[in-house]
Amino acid sequence: MSEKNARIAPDRVATVVRETGESKIAVTLNLDGTGKAEIDTPIGFLKHMLSQIARHGLIDLKVEANGDLETGSHHTVEDTAIVLGRAIDEALGDRKGIVRMADRTCPLDEALTQAVLDLSGRGYAVINMGIDNNVGEFPADLARHFFEAMAVEGRFCLHIRVLAGQNEHHVIESAFKAFARSLRDASRIDERNPDAVPSTKGTLTG
Image 1 (cartoon, rainbow, N blue to C red):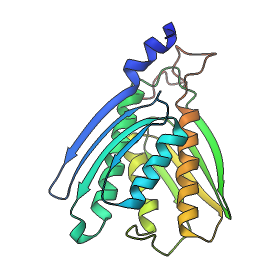
Image 2 (cartoon, rainbow, N blue to C red; image 1 turned 90 degrees about the horizontal axis):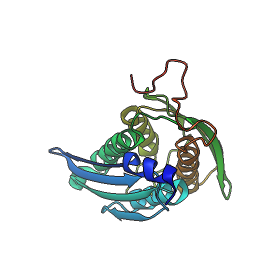
Image 3 (tube, rainbow, N blue to C red; image 1 turned 30 degrees about the vertical axis):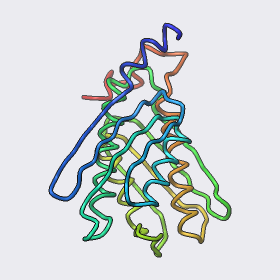
């Protein structure tokens, strides 16, 4: 292990657990992982999308997500986004040396989605999915809500725009892949400036 990697690794791992009357969510992630995913949730499509974040973001991701599915999947999906966002925020630490901003566009057959990310320390989201039909037990609008909740709790700015697409599964999956690739790029340590905070304010956490 290089000296730089030895310095980075301990600061870019996080575990966050949140339990409410509606759900119990536990997330452990390593931003400098290899894309390993251990996802335990009864919501199949959520498992599929979280696996996209791990694989395409090169994040080692372990998620245990269970909730009151008798009322639908909303609470479990929303609360997973909240905990995942908090884990990303914690793993980023003081955000020193990160590239900070990234822009990725990913296709999946007829679907094409752009994700623009700024790990700014401020939560904000503009999500335009443009889909109506559900994907199994996963209401289509939950994709928009997932990204919004994750961005707010992760304290980053996220814009997602669907540029083309008809199949709801393809549209949502291309969005998750685009986000994962943007997170991978934006969270990368900038080899040209590894010890500086990429902000004229001098902080991305204040």
